[in-house]
Image (tube, rainbow, N blue to C red):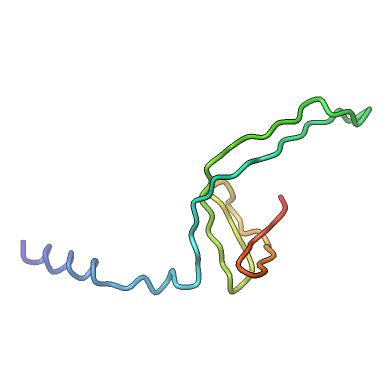
Length: 86
């Protein structure tokens, strides 16, 4: 029992040094989905979809990923604003 208390104290007192270079955000976003016909380039569907997305931003290396991406994407980070195209 004492071992569990010591282990718990160590886990709670450990600093998250690995996460220092990352910023994690929970954002309300709107996704614009546009569907076009290939032959005529006519828009068949155009809708805004509200969604809650979790982002992880690596400000040092200029990259971003969200809860749906399995790889990092290059991002433009200017004055604390990150943007990227998918």
